[in-house]
Image (cartoon, rainbow, N blue to C red; front, top):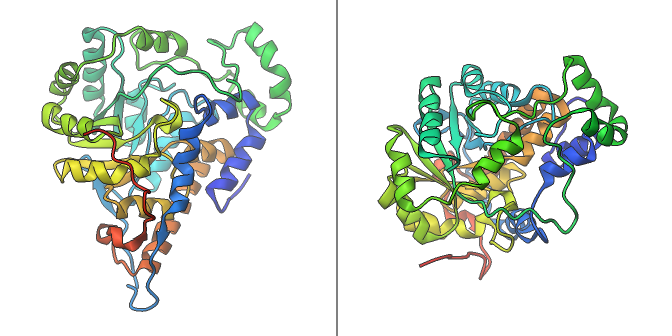
Length: 385
């Protein structure tokens, strides 16, 4: 479909390309979608305080996250079963490698970690507290053996599946019955159908990073049926991994301190699962500043949620984030044009970051400070004690 100039256009193209069930699975969100909306809208409440002269001729966008050097402060967040395009996770990994950045590979991905690490050595393995300790340890050991650069433990999930606008039909497997039910909407999206027809197989619904490569819903059911972890459990899991370790899903300052002090996390992702968790949780950009203050430099802090342009990245960095993580934007790019579409999204963000640095008179992403922004009274939220 060719080049596009904004993440918004990538979303529009994804909507035109994907069957409604697939597109709505990416949209997701829970209940009224309050958090889903606030994640994006909150960025618009922050303004810039630009300079008009003395700007540097060149700007430095490179940084590092979890011991990995990246060319821009954007990491591709782990997202399960990427059936939006046959390129799937390997295409995403190659796109990130081509633009010099890292990806998180979901435990619920449709591609094994070995193939993804081969496509991009800057891969962080993501896991859940799912199954027995033995099963969890086996997934961690497999990630080590594959050469993953770090481990991400995602903790924010409350099994809230209801959506006021309705949940899409997602079959446990693409058997004849499921394909017959999906056929009318698939036929209205011939581009998507043609892409998969060329592969000779339907989208994979298996989860090869779980033992036995179960179907997505079987793996999800195992996770859902596992009692939630204690902080002692999280510390045990961290003890299995001797490299960089991120706890993802934190929005409270007390949880941030415990992740650093009791668990030994080297990175924190301020995340509400893209509005897919507990609806009514504030936008992550609102919670970011208080968590940065609580962590006080003892771990890297990343922002995940609502990023749609390079200016959003700069706003997050000015409030103390090391980098941001994105999910929906790169999935829209993948749907629009495969690997090239993901690269296109990263190029858009890079250009926007550079433009914002130029306007603010900053030579590097590391020079950004809160005074570069206009922050309205009452914008920030401090959750927890």
